[in-house]
Amino acid sequence: MDTGDRLLTPGEVAALFRVDPKTVTRWAAAGRIGSIRTPGGHRRFRESEVRALLEGEGVVEEMREDDAASRPRNSGPTNPGSSYGPPNGLR
Amino acid sequence: MDTGDRLLTPGEVAALFRVDPKTVTRWAAAGRIGSIRTPGGHRRFRESEVRALLEGEGVVEEMREDDAASRPRNSGPTNPGSSYGPPNGLR
DNA sequence: TGTTATTAGGGTAATTCGGGAA
DNA sequence: AATGTCCGAATTACCCTAATAA
Image 1 (cartoon, rainbow over the protein chains, first blue to last red):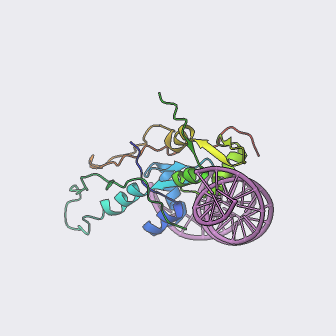
Image 2: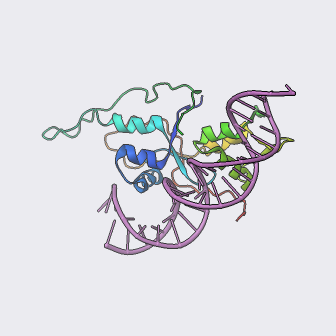
Image 3: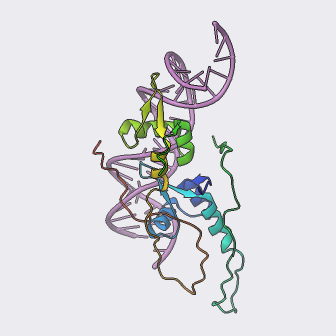
């Protein structure tokens, strides 16, 4: 069972999170986000995981006077089920 | 165990790693990945080796302090901090 | 036999890595 | 504790033409 999702470059992930690519690298080094290394040492990130991190925590927020113990999480498969096959077309 | 002797083209390997086919060729030229040459000079790569390089790290999942045990961890079999450089010695 | 897509090869920009310091 | 920036070095991406694969 292969994960079968596209891989994103550090720059792509950084653009999605509006942070510096270096910060994404630190996340990967700290284990906060999974990463795959190319034989050359560069990192690639799974789009499914990135999207899960992007939209997973954005469900509820702006809770000021509420108790911080209630952390609504997204309970569900992070992978919408992307098949393998169609080329990225990113050129 | 299946050996998986299926051969992949540079374009296939490049799509798996999200890199340029030329980069895969560079890996083969540098000895970072095994390659089979066709009589015409084109390269073919063994799927088993490619898959092993993709996520064959198979290492532990780094878990740091957890708050309320509320963290739907997506499947992220990755290696945060690990040595990557293959002992090729090719400089 | 001919057509089309992919690959090899070289060369030059862009990105990323790693560490360190603000 | 976390992020952004600087630096040098390494890796990768895109440009081209010719040859190979299917």
